[in-house]
Image (tube, rainbow, N blue to C red; front, top):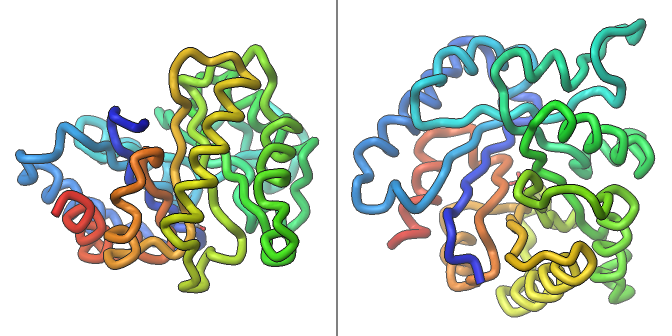
Length: 253
Ligand code: PGA
């Protein structure tokens, strides 16, 4: 069961310019006003690389945590034109990083690269938001759980501390499509996945699990009864303060 803190994570993808901090100002304002519930959740926003340094400074002592969306699979400095290492991102004061997003997998990231990224991110003391999810065909063939287990097993080492890893279950067919798993199906997958993680990594606590894929103020309503979920990874609806805040409002309604 997820009785702990809930996570509302916004993934801006390729969105945002310097003045977009105003969106976060509004979300931060809502959090401060939401005295009834704001001890129950955490807000994390992942803007593009170009905004990380500025946003990290601006929101340092505020209620919004800033996350990176990805990093390169080599650390420190090196001859890798156009890339940024986990070490460099960490130096900006960032504590969270998304790794393994299906959009990055689709553009060539394989398990080996993702494994390296997770290892380096943990070494640099990040909390990793590790994305996994089945595609349409795999779902059709009833391979969902098998795929999720494999994606975890290929990347997460037994020695890792799961307190620094948040799993984000994002069915690829649901991302940006408006298509959602049924609450029943999602609950079943969440239970099975958490059980697998507890057993495989010998955890005496529940690992954190987010759901991502077409989450908005309506779908969150359907999913809020799923106690096994510790929160949501939100793409499209995180680019507007109103849409993002409405998700939180509806979750606690
Ligand atoms: P979406 O994206 O909410 O726009 O479906 C989710 C994600 O890709 O993390």
